[in-house]
Image (cartoon, rainbow, N blue to C red; front, side, top):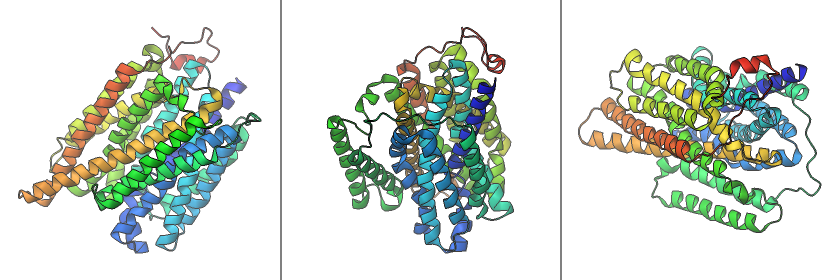
Length: 485
């Protein structure tokens, strides 16, 4: 029982640390107008409050995952927590725009370290299928529900206090996570004597990912056919090609290419990209619809996301693991993603004078159920076939696919929304009607992304059977996960 309790304490610490990171990708959005007013950001420079974080976070995920395998996942996790916490202090107290952007970049580095190894640590803690399914339900809620919680918390903190607190709130959490991690996380196992870091590979893939993120997040502003966007994305593709060629010939590659020959690993990355594209866009565009079309305040937007957070938490923590143990991975994954597609499809019909109860709440509830059910099997599929000594790298790959899918999907759907809005304005529609028309078009395409993710995952994944243990050593887990059929 002691070992059981220590595993679950470790899980809670890992989830709290990762939640702190996930929150920071969405908590800032609601506070951007206040930050711009206080620190004197220009409209174009304001985007760097978000982009600086995304660049370093997305760029260093793979490297952080590999460092976890070589140096120890616990050590990398704790280092990431410290970096993120210190950077949060710098952001919260930043007296100028330049220091805030620098702090956000360091936050991204710390966030990459924490996110890249947290999933690997959880996989190592829970080897029993039933316990692992339940643990992944907790972690799945953090990854999928963190965006909704971030919008809620950002609205509450900005509305009741000031934007400084969206960063300073991380400080006590980070200190608590670091202290608890020292006590409850298992000690790192020594890496093989011959293992070493593939420095050229690390430089190539990190540079490629940073260039691609920069090109994607700036594509709408610079223009997708502009020379800048073309050069950035072209250079990223070239570096990735050189990286793949290098990894194929080096003795100890940063990313062994055979990892992608594993069917479930490869398919789950495709599902992750499509799902993240739909999910990121839903959170971003739903908040804009509530603010710019329905006229909600920052605090009201945050409160509007409460139903999504509550339903997602219940389904992630109490439903998803039971479905996985009873039906396996594919059917719950497909069902959850289909519900998410239905949620986006409903929002694509939202009117200008929409009511929260009839036009917003049903979509929010559907997304909560769908995301709460789907994330657990996506993570299990992605990590299930990976060897333990490469779990950190696989965790980094999973996070990278979600990150890149989210950034690309959001950029594409925002561009689509803006194009549709411009077209409607040219046809004589009013500003609000045109804006809403753009949002509706983007939600419709997001629904297609989620539908494609459901089809790909539901038809192509071939996961291992999720079998219950023969003896119910842990009553709590046995109660939570019914016998499979």
